[in-house]
Length: 227
Image (cartoon, rainbow, N blue to C red; front, side):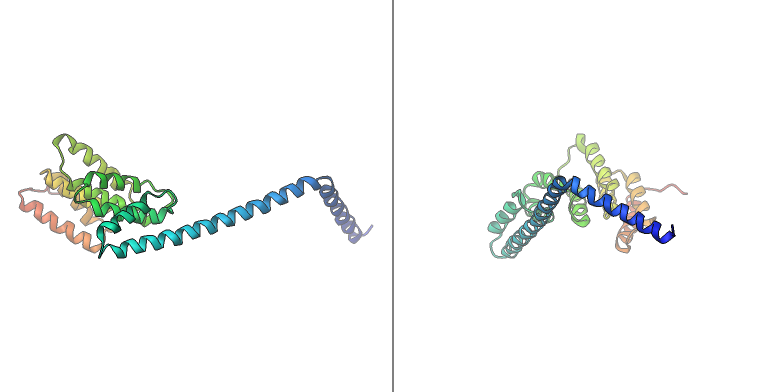
C-alpha cells in the first residue's frame, strides 16, 4: 500500500467519523446552533441599546451644560436627574456627577464629598473619569471645616487617595502637603513637597509649586535636616 493510499484512507476514516458524530448528535448541535444565534442577537441588541442610551444621555447632558449660562437652577436639576437615573451610562453618569458636585460644593460640601466618594468607585469608567474625582475629593476634604478629632481621619483618607491614584498621585500628595501646612506640621509638609520636587515623574508646573512651597515652609521658620 502506497503512502498516498494510506493518506486517502485516513482522510476517509476521519470524514466518516465527523459525519457520524453530526448524525448522532444532530439534535444537540441544532439546539446549540439556535442558542448561539439567540446569544449573538441579544449581544448585538444590547450593544445597540447601550449606544442608543449613550447618545440620548449625552444629548441631555450637553443641553444641561449649555443651559447653565442662562438658567442655572434648571440646568442643575437636569444634571441631578441624569446623575441619579439608573439607566445613565457610566461615563456620562460620572461627568454628570462631577458637574453636580461642583454645583453644590460651596453650599453643600458634605454632599459633594459623598458624591466624589461614590464616583471613585466606578470600575467600568474611563481611567481619567475614575481618577479625577480622587483629586477633587482630596481638595474638598481639606477645604471643609475640620474638627481636631477628625484631623487623623482626613490625613488617612488623603494617604489612601494618593496611594490608589495612577494619574494624580503627586497632585493629591500636594493637597496632603497643604493640609500639613494648615495643621502647622511643617516637618511633614516639607517632606511631602521635597518628595514631589525631587521626583523625576513630577510635571514641571507641579515641581515648581513644590519648590516654592519648600521656600515658604523654610520662611515660616522650619529648618530642614541636612542630608
